[in-house]
Image (tube, rainbow, N blue to C red; front, top):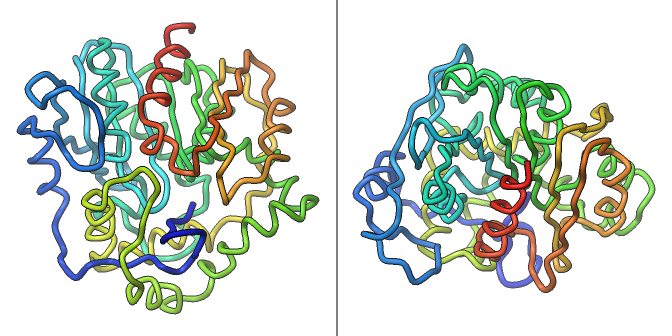
Amino acid sequence: MVFLSAGRQAGRMPIPPSRREFMKMSAVAAAGVASVGIGGTASAAESPRITPLRIPTPAGTFDAVASGPRHGRKVLLLHGFPEFGIEWEHQLRALAAAGYRAVAPDQRGYSPGVRPAGIENYRLDHAVGDVRAMADALGWRRFDLVGHDWGAAVAWVAAARYARRVRSLTAVSVPHLGAFAEALRTDPAQRKASEYMDRFRQPAPIPEDWILASGPPKLPGVAPEKCAEYFRRLSQPGALTAALNWYRANDFEGYGQRVGVPTLFLASTKDPMVAPSGIQATKNWVSGRYRLEILEGIGHNIPEEAAEATTRLLLEHLDSV
């Protein structure tokens, strides 16, 4: 839920002055060009295409990227901060190659068409409702749900509330919010790891100003070009304030409903934002089939830093449901 420069230095989160729009990256993806930040040996010509998509909902129109056959089994992937839907590029291509229809939206505040003013509009309840609204707009009766960071927070709640529609859950990095809230209350290690949130929650434009003034960030496992694309998008007017409003609006309390759908939780040993206590306690908040995988030596940005492992485990999980 934070991006880091070398080491854990909350606050070094620059946004280059260039302000490229969503369609620039989408056009690159649509052309089948190998995009930034993803390792692998397959050439662009061999990889499934990623195409731009717009999803109209009552809250506004979400920008998204999509891949795979339209008739394929549906997978919705939710990004975290400071990423956008392109965080899931490696997984989108792999899912498409396996016959799935995978869609990764830019969530509320990240999509210019769903960027309401007011901190209260970034409560998790709104983002959870967006999941159902997007599925409705896409015509998806049932779908598999995947989320990382804030996307995982949304996905845990959505999987519990919409169990008749969510076939399976894959949560990455962030524990079930019942376990996470408990860790924040009782575990000094988690409170220490979450101190950066207090800085993000300061009134606008205090954190926005120091974020914009910081030097180039380094997201472990993410190519500098892709980091720059994230920050170019966050430099658009209102985008960074909207993204930070997720922190200002939420304290993670009140989301204690257990998840009954088959669940995979991917965590890691070098995540500076998540203490082990919440990871281990998550099993107590899942009533359905549950699998925990802890990736050794990996930090918080699991989908990109450990793209191959994430994709393999995700496909295994989906195949088991």
